[in-house]
Length: 229
Image (cartoon, rainbow, N blue to C red; front, side, top):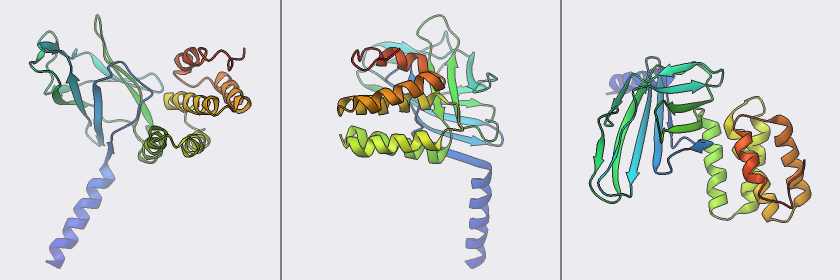
C-alpha cells in the first residue's frame, strides 16, 4: 500500500507539472451573456476549454464556426482543432426548452508557457463569439473572483481595496482585465462619493491605456461629474 500511495503521489505531481486547470476563469468582456467558460486546462499537448451555453428562447439554435481562434497578447493566433458537443456551422445545436443548457468543449493547441491572458474569437458573419481577456493564471483569477464576490455582497470597502491590490500586483501584465479592474475601482469610488480618488484612477486608466480600455472609458463617460479630459 505504501508503495502504491507513493506511486500515486508521483503521478499526481507529474500531471500537475504539465497541466494547469483554471476553474471559472474571469474575463474582461463576453459577447454572449449566457455563454460561460466553466474551466480551462492547458497541457503540453493542448488547451481545453469547457463551456456552458444557456438558451432562454425555445426552438433556438447555435453553432460555432470552425474558424475560431485563441488570440494571444502579442497578436499571434491558435486555431481551434475541434469542438466536442457543439456543431460547427452550418450544422446547429437545437435548444428545445426554455433554460436548456448545452455543455461542450473546445480544443486548441497549447498556450505558450507564461500566458496570463488570451482572447477567444469566432470568425463568422453575425453574432460571433468574442470573449476578451480570459485569465489563465491561477492566483490572479482567484484574487479577481474574490474581489467580485465582495462587490456582489456589497462589501464595497473590501472590494475596492482588493481591486486596487490586484491592480498594483499586475502592473507587469498588459492585459484587458486591468481595464475592467480600473472600471470597478472608479465606479466604487464614485458610488462612495470619493470623486477625487475616482478621477485619479480615471487619469491612470487614460494614461496607461491597457487593452479594452476604450470600451471601459466609453462606459465611464456616462458619469458626467466624474469625466475629465
